[in-house]
Image 1 (cartoon, rainbow over the protein chains, first blue to last red):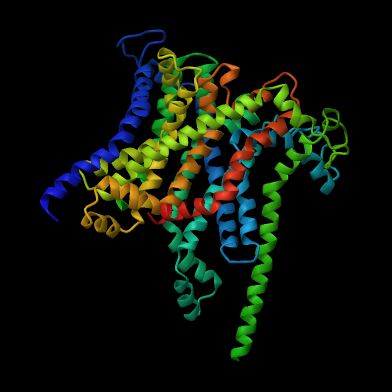
Image 2: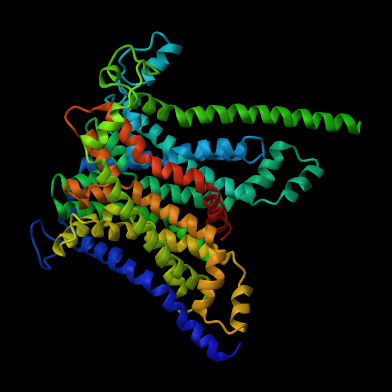
Length: 291
Length: 285
């Protein structure tokens, strides 16, 4: 190629990438810096008087500590549920059985529901008197308490929220794993079968290695999504009872828009983002290196 | 010997299929049960929704709740707002994302790797990190309580994904096509618009869908950037029904189902594109 064209190409690349980059700087990076600045500004203060007071307060805040623990548990259990259910469904759907498309469509449906609606659905399903779950359980176990309070129970409120989130979120992982499964060449399975590998061996020696990258990507994306999950929790429990089902998104939202302590909320948001960034760093490095 | 091996393999296949079907049926019930319960409630009168014992199928089917949501609450307006906001967001972020994706896929300019990492990192930013400043800045430039303000906010969350998905998709299209175009004397922009974009339709559709879905389903931004009834989106309208003093469950379930219908239908009709776009973009990339 003539050198003129490569020079041209080098600069043309910027032209294509520039609009999106400028947009992101304006609408994402700039506000993020305001948040950072707000988090070190004294309460009600302005200008450049800096303070770390909000962070000191945050480290001693039992509600924030509890909320961090809740969020980690929420994310970990949701990811586990999404992965197990998503992988099982992807394997079952990858067999070219008759009716496969029908089942794939149905399995996708929960993900097409807005998460605020998913929260409302489960709030109604778990309603102690008029909900569907208690009578359903009593059909199997007649001795089950008639008006069992799922969402105000200190021990079962949190698992209930996670359950609802597993219901709503597994299809994304399923779709990604299914796409990964379809990309594994058939010849690999045939070769393994010729070599006399059984079903389990084929799964561990062909399927899993073929899926490893997409599993990592799916889990990483799922982690980011679940870490930020907001509307499902807000609609289902509002964070209650007490702060037992509070997650970081709902806590930061409340601190901003219900308690109106913007500086403290900013500090919390910065801490939350820093943790999320560190957690997703392996993914960024992995994916960044491959491209 | 050979025949019995084939027979045992066939038997194994059949037992596999039975197991798979059993599992698929169970998981379909798991996916549909909560929705079926919503549907059942939405077809009841309020008295029946609260009657005991709980009835699985309404004794007297009524569409009352589906009428009330448009008259007692302005859900028509909410729908219009959601359609405008999600549609414009999807278009804007897909166009900007496709341009960036093509730039990343075809050009090797200085700083490309760092910029790519930047786009990747912006995917990790949580809405609550920037929601406070957004509220203040939009109020300062008088875009608080406007659909424009919401669109800007939604492009924020959709654009990083749109750029990334597009790049993956363009990577899967052979570079020889571009080179053939160059030989024919076409400009880069012509090549992008006339050769690459038509091939990239499945990827573009999946990006559009993804962005539309993200915007349609959001609650956080609408909750923080809109305070007047006329600018509420569907999800916000539904969320406010939960906050009312006495929850009208038939109307709430009806509004929830109708509010989810656009994204459900879009997905069911376009899921082929979606899976293919994901497969070629995110997976193989």
